[in-house]
Image (cartoon, rainbow, N blue to C red; front, side, top):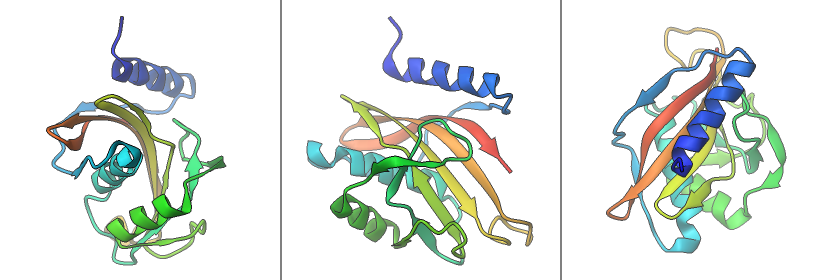
Length: 169
């Protein structure tokens, strides 16, 4: 039987190949991590580690966090009917120093995350970052990047161990 994270990567690769998106599978030990607090807060810790992974460069215009969940493995991410609880959205926005809005036109970078799937010490999440004009360096046009992430909890800390790029512009 395949571990949950391997199954997730296989599903992501299949979906990406069906939609003819370029897929790059990278194995990495990411330094961006989030301590794993009480089990009720595990989804928040996973979301924080995923956002920190995606935000290697801080956007000069700041960060905008959407309170809606994205459909998993969509590229670019699109909101679905699900919504993160207001307490969890506020906590994540506070930890990221982000504003909360569904407006992708805000300056800086807009983040949209899927509902994290946590199974024991493994988690899966999809994240889309949409950069406003000039935020990706060189004053280029607006663009996005969507990644499917696999995280593991080691010694109480969530770390991104793999990501698949689902789309980029």
